[in-house]
Length: 509
Image (cartoon, rainbow, N blue to C red):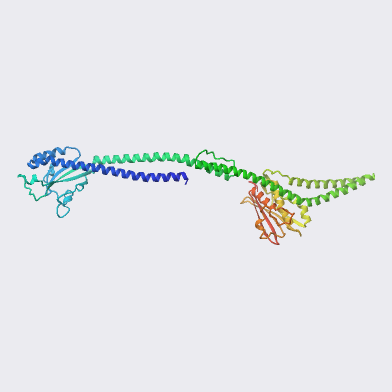
């Protein structure tokens, strides 16, 4: 999951949980406050009803009380108003059909005071109300207000209430909470809507800031790392910012510049080392080449003197002319032989790094064996070629690959001073699209102590003046540059087998 998305999801979860808790607490608090206000209003209403009926009760004017209840029944918000006597009989009510009905002591309205064996003499304010459900499904706030036996009551001549009774009856007022519930629902919806709008607004702004300040710059940094991984050291991250990401971008650009400079320096040193190894190989070849050139040159000199004698004799018979032509043909062949030797040396000694092109690897191997042919003869080494059928086409710098093979062949010949067999075998692996070249000698082999270091620069086991230890290290660099692999299998006293793998050209068989 991207970093920006992780931050966005985390922020969303925090805001969702926080605002959900805030919304719940806020709505619950508003509902409780509103219900408390309604309860206080209902309590005041019961007090007003008691006061408005107080005088009529003292003088026992029941018709006045009935009229008051009748008037109250038409007021909105009242579900029912009743006065129960001490026996649970409904004395006054806004519903005439309920008059003189008697409710059970276990009814909800009576249980508030009669839930104990002895009826309560006083009732706390918070215990006076209850919430019930109407037949229509809306909530009703029911509140009871005890009618106490006051001094004016039991002292009045028209009443029969002894002073030992503390409670004469109960005023029960039921008020509809439909409007209150609608207000609570509307407040809840408004709060939820405001919370959703707030969340969406904050998340939109946060998402934009995350994309602008984090996601887009990180994507540019990622693109830069991919470009560097692909070898494009000229890539620059186009970020001009004065924060940590801008500092990271500047450091990245500085790093790529330093990497480019280091790579250019490394390539320059590598080219120099390759040329040094080439010159060292050229020097080692010079002795055998000099001997190789000496034979045809001696023949040319001998035939030149012989021709001079034949021409000086003046007796140019047809047989003698035919002999002269034959001698001249030999001189020409030997001269071309010398020219080819010199040409191969000149081609090998070129310093320029060639272009990659499609080349037949067998042709490169044949040219290398021609260059070391006399070296093989001098050391009594038999050459065996075991090429696969057909061409082995690869995309390579043929001069560098030739230099690599020549270095391996030269080392193989030097490992057999007493003679032996040098085998060159090529095998194509079509599944892996690789061509494998194995150069096997029957020489002294490589010791276990020297084997881990043979590809290290300037590491050599040869006597002083015989080598500088660059041959195989240069070979390793050349093969690696061609996306190939080089390895060696060896055993002391049984020879070495250098294995070089190079990618086949696409479409080559």
